[in-house]
Length: 118
Length: 118
DNA sequence: AGTTCATTTCCATGAAACTAGAAATGTAGG
DNA sequence: CCTACATTTCTAGTTTCATGGAAATGAACT
Image: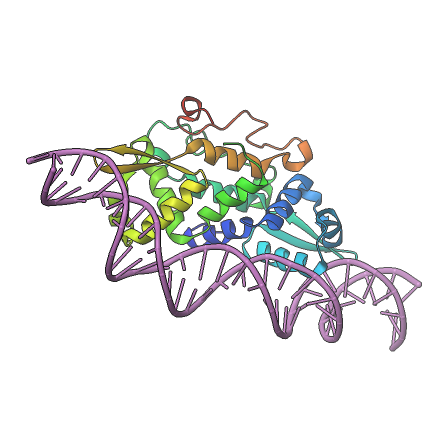
């Protein structure tokens, strides 16, 4: 995912909602295994239609991914997108001064960023 | 600033807007010196009233701070709040597994986080 | 092929947010 | 003190977003 102002706004907007934020954090904590839509709906106590709306929103924003497994759809957090977003916010932090930014200290990869090719 | 779901939503919502995102990144790059409202308005080509609306939004969200200098109001990014937000998103990343999260590797402080007391 | 089950789409309603001109506020400097 | 200037508040109109029940889709087991 190429990170620019437009996609950053989409990602931030996707996270700027109580249910979607809880959902994304749930997936962040779930790790690579991810969770099926049904399990998420139960964990967050959301109607199917609402959850589907929020899942689609996060997917459009590039923050989560889906794969099929049996007849369930498994959702996982996209750590690469996450890192890209944070990097974008911090870009040229402090005008390039001796600021202890993640960038300055080498990329702060989360989990499988390298394997998944951010 | 204590970080919880509610304040994270506020912060993300504040950043999830083209002009405010540009504004925040401008202040991140400006560093500790910050910028006066007038200078920001010029840099971003925004009407005063609109800029004021966005500045208030970011301030309410705890992402920026203001101080007076002469007759100008100087705005600066709050790096501590920023780090708190990122940490909240990553909390318990991957269920505590051997995930190369910032937390697991020691706090990723940005600039003067220690001086400003996150 | 048929059936079941997980998930998504449709729809209407209600709430919240962005914009920008003009007027008001208030601080500082002469 | 009074003037000038930087910034904020007011106001109204237009757009965008969240919700949830019911129906529809569609993939997978038998």
